[in-house]
Length: 188
Image 1 (cartoon, helix red, strand yellow):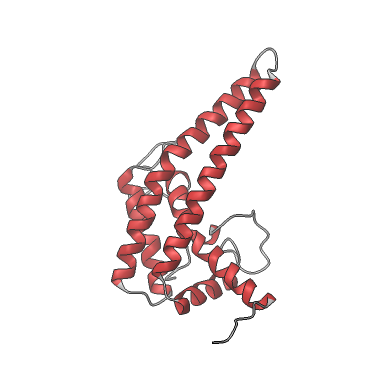
Image 2 (image 1 turned 120 degrees about the vertical axis):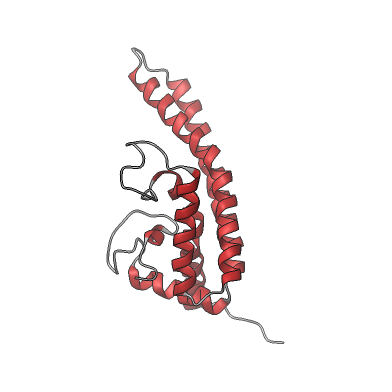
């Protein structure tokens, strides 16, 4: 038995693979607010969240592209879809809480006098909520990573690296976050 040495290159590959797989977690949150609606372009009004059917269709389409890109199996696709749908179901209430907190914060800042204690309580609540969301996303990443083979994870990580963090190509300087590049590009 030999010890495995962790080099900067292997560590970087591991983190890159993990970040690439984070896109499946991002599906859960992006599907609630940022995906293009399935169906006609005007099938929902501005600011209206997509329907559960639209979210399910978007998850299926994105995972289909992922599976095609990594030469995955139908069984892997089914497992990934189920995991993403479970994460989405867990994230929807958290997203609703986050949006309610945002509105509360705007109301506090628009008040005739500023209640700094209430703002601090809200900040703490929102920080705790963000931590809960982050934990769920990491759980989703790990669960999804276990569905793919090491070779598929490496292939996905390489594809994500080639496309850049957010799918805009190398050198694009976008915001930080797990899996922002999963918005498209697979199967193109």
